[in-house]
Length: 259
Ligand code: TMP
Image 1 (cartoon, rainbow, N blue to C red):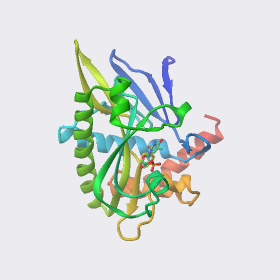
Image 2 (cartoon, rainbow, N blue to C red):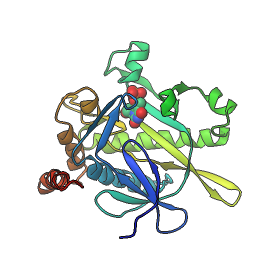
Image 3 (cartoon, rainbow, N blue to C red):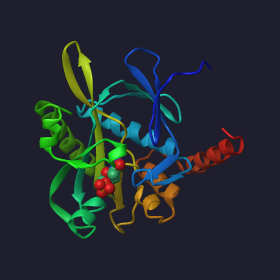
């Protein structure tokens, strides 16, 4: 196969030039990082599972009218997406206190928030993705006010939809991160949902036991990381029991061959 041009390599994904102008191929790696890449590791089969979970969620969101960059899944680790101009803001939506919110404000983990919180972080690894306010976004021109209104509206819709979707399979959506990008139609720019939605960027707790089913298992060395990602995929109906073994086998097989 002809070598494809790599456009960008992130911590968990690689973007390659797509088959047509305006498209890219998004490749999901097994690499995992936490605390701004101070902690690094791999989660066997994560890329395969996140590709499937993200496909499932983006397809469902598209069906309720949330525009996304997703076009179609190509294979186990790759999906075809629309090329966007990424807006350099990470949008975090919180329903229950966890993670940095508990540390910053001293709120106990697991506290149900009386209202959903949306936070913004400036997407800059060198600065450690600092939290920002609307004022910074306007002042530095990272997005227009109209774009931020659209982003907040979409974020709330995504939160409502995903909270219900996960509740139906016994999972609480604690918090999650979204990224958006611009697509141009002549002079007119439109904002669409980009990146991925997977247990890498969501906190997902079992509804009955509050057991963590997401990347916090990796961040906090809780063990059972691969199993947690598989459990989310299995409950979403994306993995049969035979596949769970296959995902792991395939990965150890690849590693042995040095691929
Ligand atoms: P936080 O509590 O560490 O701020 O994270 C909030 C949510 O955002 C959590 O579900 C994990 C996700 N997240 C990312 O996807 N990428 C990041 O770089 C960070 C800091 C958080």
